[in-house]
Length: 566
Image (cartoon, rainbow, N blue to C red; front, side, top):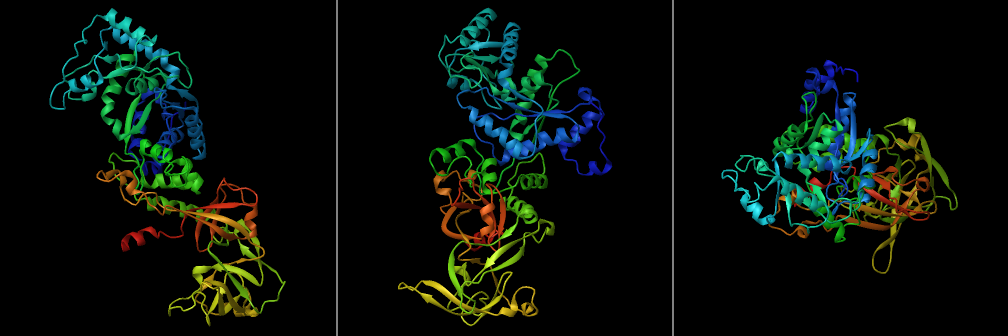
């Protein structure tokens, strides 16, 4: 691999992880090469926090001409499934990253077993037959030494025999474990004879029933890094206290000083109004509180994708918040700002009316239809234009009309002029109500000399409304998503039941919406700005004759205003 050179300009924007990597390269460590890995456990769907890890693992490899492998830490077959393996691959690719190779911790089961046998033979590991509760009680406290197990000094041959029989299925789960013999008086609790193997009698998604004894995460993780040639093992801060044990096992495994992986920890991503706990996310799915892992209210990567977030907006957000050594909580409004910023550049502008009421232009010729040209995206004129039909009968938003309006109501009300976007200025003349007093039709007259582009179109009018043609628009369902939790930091609300924190208005489904005919061409996940309403995308549940749109985000941050008033 060629030496990496970074410009002075690049050095100015280095985060602390990049600084460490550059120092290692300068000092010639690990043959001046960079190899990282993204090591998820396939026991659930990835969430936005994992996206931060993906960006640094793959990003470091890209920046320094290295490689990043995908490795599934599949050491607990009870919770793991091929479904999760497939979803993880899809999420990484959606974010725009590509792994060099795919590995599994199960690839190393034999090497890990052999290493464990080596430790037993050297008197550095033993079989313990005590209960989990007893072992936990013997651990001691950070200020009080632990108590040695009565099995700690059992004969090596006896431990070897029992270890073999553990894997042959002779003993039930929990009957015995393999522990590393390190130091029960260590100030680091992880050094107090940690468990390194346990019995699990559940078929593995790759190895079937070949193994009955499985390595613990702390025993498998660092060794897998070593077997693969990882140079920089990047993980979140909760693993910082595990690092000495990581290094201990590497020291026991390696045979020379030419290579060793280095663990580096960074702050995990915590968002306001969001939970990242896999256990709680699984609870939401199992209890039917959301519609699956890819529900657009979920913080999963597939949930954000379905809601209409772009991979670029997620990556831009992660670049903005950066990597530090200090945990904190990020306002979800910053993530929403990132997607607005990206969609503003790329999303075509279209007309949609989500709570329609009919507007009849009484002096417009019956049967006449005009095709009006509208710009797809004013931020990108190269995106071209499309046509929208204008006719005598239109739909406008119900909230854009008020029969008895206050003085500063600049939308449609009797006697007042408004501009219909990209078309004419109209003057409201009245409305029609049903027997319940609900407005069913609004009437107006148009000024034919005020069509967009004509001299009179420059007349100063304070209100501009969006609309669609009644005869030429399409029916659609619109799903308005909001934050799933009402509490700013749900994880800190220890005194409240998890369910009490849920936002009852996190999903509103509107089934009588109308959208312009151009949207018949839309494909699942296509992005649009519904003018004056927000950014939306076509949901994969859509089918011919039934368009379904998800609101990705409103045009402005309205949540903060609502929260401030409450």
